[in-house]
Image (cartoon, rainbow, N blue to C red; front, side, top):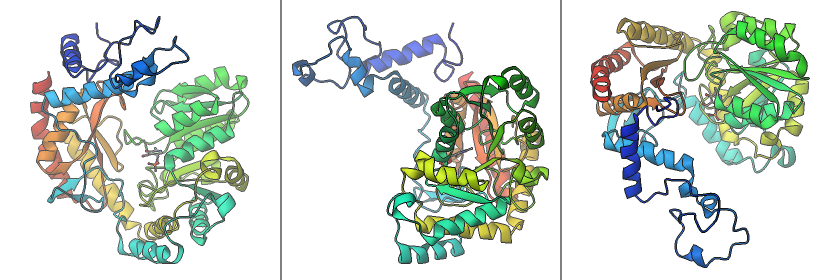
Length: 467
Ligand SMILES: Cc1ncc(COP(=O)(O)O)c(C=O)c1O
């Protein structure tokens, strides 16, 4: 029996065998070579005649381990691509767009509705954002030069950090050049082998990777299940020294919201730090877009580590941590992703500061996004679509089951000038593949109806084709 979670696109064994046969035709090394003797191992793809002449010091290590083309991960990608090709699904990734990433986009000279951008509040390309980035670029160039620790700061860094800290009502903030690296670096700076991370099962890859790389113990609790988290804490908290409970505010794959008041109570009861990743909550939650603390009306200083990204609502690139001054000071001197990485490009820092200013000045952008998201959720549900855990805030998945159905649907909608990306195995488990819709305050109700009508028409065709 094929294990569904391990199967490729949920294909049955015959279909998989067929794919593997086709791959053999493409001369991939599909069977992991014998690990006993070097002589037994077949010549892996990509190693040509020259390797036979090369003298190898360690003959007990098969050359298989020196070939990227023979890596199982690479072969799996090739199989997925071949399957998609075989069933006539175009590759939906790395499509070149010819315009700013907004609610509408241009691809191959044609206008598309775009549900695959983080431009939640329509600030990407805003004239004030462009003007400040342009002016900063003329004065400070495009690069910070080197790590801020050694190369010094530019005024845009402090201005952005001050504005972020003020918004959260905390003492200080620090910006990193990547949101992903912010999580990885922060967790691995704060924790070590005697510590632990408790994270929501659906937490972002960067939180999980940060936990893994920190060397701390890692406990995953079922999505948004604070009772399960409490049970885990009761059973295991005392085994560890420092503990971080880490979760997303608004979940990026599911559009659900962390139960912040319960998490704060647990972190206080069990002496833990609480880290909230606000990548998708900033601009989308709360009357002013402050995020999940405003959504629940809790005191933001009850959260120890606010993390966010600059790549979504704040329309540039990078991440930040906001919290007490000791936290920020520690990260500025110790976090590898800050200390050993270049400072944020000054024009990008200025762009994010301006975007934050506009967000706070024009809360109607957030309310419009919230109204559109609620409209989307209501319309999707009324069409019988499966929106999973979505609560109607900016991110709404339509769960369709198999990766093939999701891929086919994305391709069908693309033909109808609607750009929405499939999220497939292994990003989500097989059977939970989906189309993920990101909404923008610049979408209209008519845009949403166009997309949902097209989806409702195409879905039965896709399901029938792959049943
Ligand atoms: C929840 C979450 N955290 C962190 C990141 C990483 O942020 P960035 O893309 O800015 O590196 C993402 C990326 O989308 C995310 O969704």
